[in-house]
Structure formats: C-alpha cells, structure tokens
Image 1 (tube, rainbow, N blue to C red):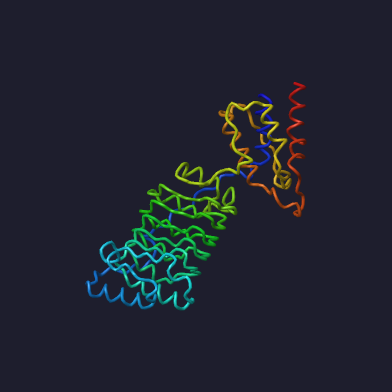
Image 2: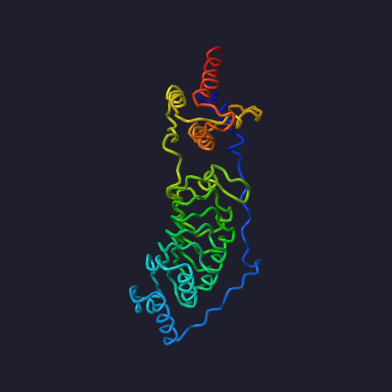
Amino acid sequence: MNKITSTLLILLAMGGSSMAMQGAGSAADPAAMDIERPTYVELSSEEKNKLIDELQQLLGNGVPLDRQKILDRDDLNLQDKFKQKSADEKNRILLKISEMRWLKTLYLSNNHLRQVPDSIGNLTRLQWLTLSDNHLRQVPEWISNLTQLRTLALSRNQLTSMPPEIANLTRLHTLTLISNPLTSVPATLSDIHTLTELYMENLPNLLLTGPSPDQWGRQEILRHFGDRVRGLSTPKALQVMPSTTTETEVYTALDQQPIRINRDTFTQNRLPDITVDHVFDIHEILQKLTLILTSLNFTDPTKPAYMEYETLANDYASDTRNAQSMK
C-alpha cells in the first residue's frame, strides 16, 4: 500500500463514526394517513368576483388586484403586497385567499409572515406556491394537503425543520430551501421521485450526516439526489482533489488547512483493519476525507478537547510518512 493510501485510510478510519451511513426513513403513506382534504366545488363567475372584491377590500385600494389574471390564469400574485399590515389583518387576508380554491398559482413572498393559517391547505388545486422571504420557522403540516404542487419556494425564511409528510407532494418538481437555518431534512424527501431541482444554497447549519435515520444531512442528500441538488457543495477550502493528485500535494494541502478539529471525534474509535482490497478509487477516498473534515468542529476553540489541524497532521500524516519510509 502506498503512502497516500495508508495516510488517508488512517484518517478515514479515525473519522469513521462521522461517515456512518444513516438509513432513509420510510415514506409517509398518504393512504394510511387520516388527512381530510376538502373536495373542490367549482364556483360561479359571480362567486369568484365576489371573493376578489372582498380580498381587494382587505388589501386596500393601494394594492390593485389583476382580476383578469386571477380569473383566466388562476394566478394570484401578492408578493410584497401586504407586509405593512398588522398580524390580524394579514390573517384575515390569508383566510380570504383560502376561500379562492380555484387558484393554481399563489405568490406570498416578502410579506413578513410568521405563520400561515391551516385553511391555506384547502387550496388543493395549487401547482405553484411561493412563501419565500418571510419569517416562517416551520413548514406548516398542511403543506401535505397540496398534492398537486409542482413548485414550492421556501427560501430565506427561518426554517429549522420540515415535516416528513412533505413526501405526500408526489408531483413536486422544484423545491427551494435557500438561506434557512435547517440542520437536516426528512429522509422521506427521497420518496418524491418527481423532484428534479432541489435548491439548497447557503444552509450553514446543515449537518454533514443526519442526526437519525429519518433525518438526512449534507452527505445523504448529495448521495441520493446527486446533480439534482443546486448549491450544496463542500466548502471551498476542502474541495476534493482530482484523482491525479500526488502524495506531496496531499500532504501540503493537509498541512495548510486553517481549521481546528475536535479530537474527541477520534479517540473513542478503534481503528479497523483495512486492506488494499477495499481501495478502488483514490478520488473516492479523498472525497470521503473531505466529508469527514467538514463534519467536525472547526471554529469553536472554547469547547473542550479541541485541537488545531496542524497538530492532527503532525500526529498522523507525519508519523505515517515515517512509518512508510522505514519499510
């Protein structure tokens, strides 16, 4: 076994616990869930116009509604239209919108919404829903009612979690989660087989691996969705090296990493016996090493038992060099 393989295998073995694969959670079964979905009843033109008039009254004349677009294209765009309203006024507006059950497209972005009433889940014909640029902390559970959705935009909120019932959105093509404090996503997301675009830029709190089998982190998401994920990548300082990388280049990169590692991650792990038969692709080894490094504590020297990365390199990389040179 050459020097680079030996060194990387030692590092991989020590970080093995942080690379442990988490099994995907089982899909939410809509048939097994007692979800009461309202049956859509076609409204007359007169009834639709009456609802539009009532919504216009709640919004005020300063926010003119595009009646023709609402009626002909089933499209209501209220982006940035009522963010100055009080919480009570916003709730009345949303309740009125929930009566417009013919809608297929609804934009509610940038209205400083902290919550959305359950009645919006009655809009079961929606195919496009935008709730970006608000102050939502959780994805509302009623989202699972909107089984016709093709696009769901939730970017730039304060989301910390998502319900596993999102798997009910079996026609979803595009999901945007950009700039949220999410630490993981439900593994049931993998059961949405129509999902072709998953936007996940700027998710600084997203864990490398999920905290449990039914919650996925960065590693599981990338493994399952591959190039369908947009913006979810390894930090620039730890980009994967090409398979042609030389031993000297690897050691140089290791020695220069300006990061800190919590040594507790390593000390409780027994180093398994790894033979050369396990090694098929040096690029894959480097990629796994990258994932290990990105999962550890780099930034908080106040936590107990942290160590600088240079110390790790000296402890293991240099010792491996010496050991190999004696063979």
